Length: 448
Image 1 (cartoon, rainbow, N blue to C red):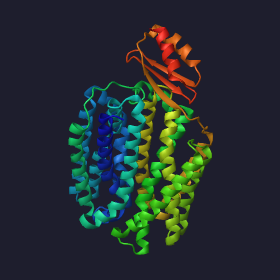
Image 2: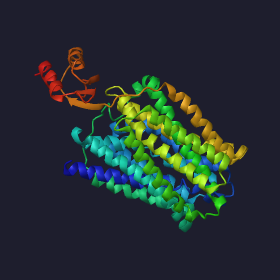
Image 3: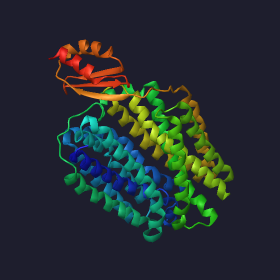
Image 4: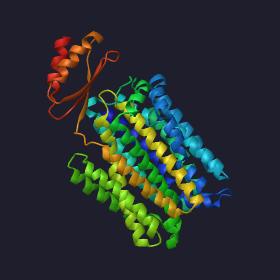
């Protein structure tokens, strides 16, 4: 990567870390800290933990598309401003209602698509995967740090302090975006931003809808877990500030489990391992529902849960990228992200509602039942080959597209093609056999 790409990757990764750190820090502490509010109830806790997911799911695609009209940086700065406002409202909240309002406003700063589009704008195609990998690692890193820091900071400054820190971190992101990230005029890419005209078609794709429902259930379950787990840990006389001492070895063990599963996958995403991860989560919830008062059982269950969660969270985006038609990855990922965030909202709502009406054990059983249904739905999913996505710039007319498509499709390794004469772009899905020099020769023959 050149200096501009390194600078952009690190700056955008830091923006993600600072923003997601604030979002994630409240998850392991809110269920306990919220007991101080006069209108406390498990349902309100669930809405406060998952509420941001509702607006994230609703605005994810529109905000990404808006960045193509207004520019990446203005939309990102707007999103960060709304996120910071929501954080400060939640910090000043004297009731659960206002905290939920703050969380919903936090979610309205839905800038994931715009950030990824900006990362695409400032990187060359040959280096884009590295830039995206740096940002992806930053997101995972922020989750682990937040789970460990959240209980410690909550004990020192309370829930209001965490929300205030979250707002300050969001404001610190703004100069990073404005001055640290290079300014490049972006052009819509079908593999980066969603196209509203394609949403209906891709939602109905037999492979993609299973992945969309899967990521919805995955994030429903992690939200459900964090509504209940902090309360469960109180049964073992663990103060909130000591929860990190359990989370640290649990997360370390689950990362080790993830490494083992990745090694077994050998660069692929076998369906057998995906099914195994879902089964791990089902067993984890079943153990928490039936043996939640035994400490070693709880620790084992949480390790199983996070091992399965980590593997699925890392695998699903790669599967969406492999399955989405050429030139339509941006739309597929926009839909995927919307389902992902809606799952967080659903998890908070259902967990709080079930606990209100029945008990925490029933909420854990809901997780086990959800994983069992998920396993049945996933039976129809078919394994996919490992593919690469190539984006070639070329000048061609609509009349030349049929001839180009015919000649490109017969090249070794080409699985799918899509053309955009408006952007002078050819999108290709290819396997390892593909030779880009042959494709370039075909294009030059058509339009020397």
